[in-house]
Image (cartoon, rainbow, N blue to C red; front, top):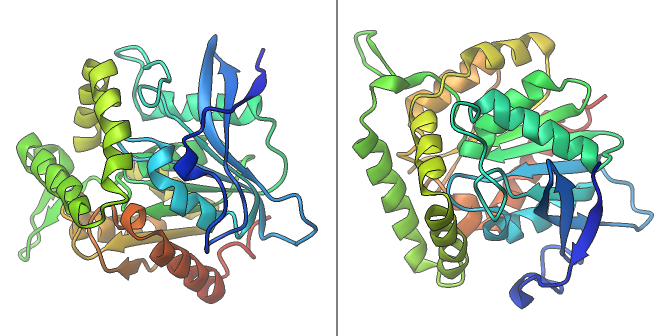
Length: 303
């Protein structure tokens, strides 16, 4: 049985109002699988008509929803409710057991979270990086829940590099030092954004220290993920999907991004920035979302 409670210990820098949205965060707790799961929550109870009823945001590897507060405020412009849970092994959520922590297992956990939260109406799922891979599998498993999806610098394509003479290097061929080196470099890029780096480190360091083995198991799965079957099925289903990728991303390669767009049958949207551009520049993410919604009718096509 699931229950929900409000956690008043939300850090002060996350509350209040800013120029993006007049919505205030609430840090909530929900009982799931015998543990209290933390998630960030926004709700607009005004009479303003919104494009979707719910946004479910799934965060990237090693961090959690508190690194994405600006992004969540942007998403609140289009949704009545925004949910951003701490995925298993992150933010105090217990890790999934070894051998039962693949993408189908994460998607099942997300499904249970959605049911425990009693979602109603149209749901847009937004995933960044690792969270994008979880979003793909969740959308594949839960067509009755997901009405549209946005993937930002998402993992899931089986392609690492496409060579000019036709040879394809699969994602499984990518050395872990190559993937990890670019991920570390991306984290270092936050140094220029002083208000972002502390929030990222406040989440990443405790997560890695609390569940080190689970965190690295997830990293290995990210490095070798192949969700091409799921992507093709979503294309067959004609699920409205937008794919966003930043031009300086070396964690998710251009070839991987282009292969994902091909599998989904969509034209991707390229932006400036590194792998985690949306964390550092959430207003840019809001602008891209507005362009996608206006030009592609992403949310107007939801059933």
